[in-house]
Amino acid sequence: MHTSNEPDAPGFYLSVGDTCSFAKTISEADVYLLAGVTGDFSPNHVNAEFMATSAYGQRVAHGALLVGLMSTTSTMMVARSRSLQGPRETPVALGYDRIRFLRPVFFGDTITVVYTVSAVDDVKRRTTADIRLTNQRDELVCAAVGILKWVTDTTEQARSL
Image (cartoon, rainbow, N blue to C red; front, side):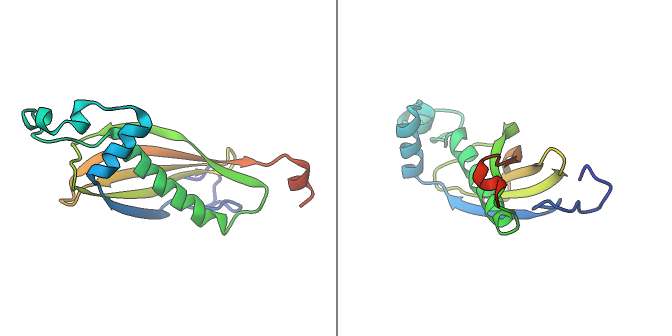
C-alpha cells in the first residue's frame, strides 16, 4: 500500500497491482552459459550421469538463473515507469527478499515469471513486488519479493532541468 492516504499516491510511477510477465524455456545452453560465467559447475547442473541417479533423476537449473529471470521482469517494470518519470530519478533494484526455490527446474521447462507491485512508498521512493515463477504445469517453482528504489539525481545537470 501507498504510505500516503491516497488510493494512488500522486507523483509516483507505479501503482499497487501493476504487473508484467515474462516466459522462457530453460535450455541446456542457458545452464552451461551461466555455469561458465559464475564458475558454478556443480554436478547438479552439468553432470547428467551423476544426476540420473539422484532424487531428481536429471540435471536442474541454477537458482541464480531463476533470479536472473526475476531481474528481467523488474527491468520490464522499470521500462514501463520510464515513460512516466522525470529525468531526476534513476530506478535501481535494491534486491530480492525471501527467495524460495520450491521445486526443481529442469532443462526444457518453460518458466513464467509474474511481477506484481504489492506496495508503493512514495516517501522512500520504493516499490515492493510479489514475484512468482511457475512452470508449464502451473506449479509454483520459486517465489520472492522484489524491491525497486528511485534514486534522486543530485548532479548539476539534473538540478538545472
